Image 1: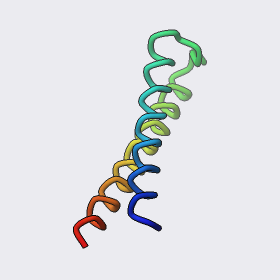
Image 2: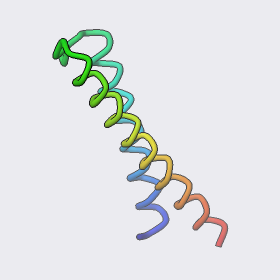
Image 3: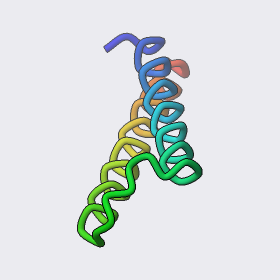
Image 4: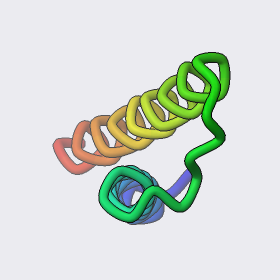
Length: 65
């Protein structure tokens, strides 16, 4: 992947996941009411954040080359 594409994709994933996380926390739009759904939603958000950080680090390391 292109280094700039990796950085852009990583930043988009991080920003989108933080916005969804903040929206669901403050407004309660995705309040499914069960502990299983809460665990699943939290896991998906952390997965997206980690993938975004991975792409961000890959893009930054490509900038050094």
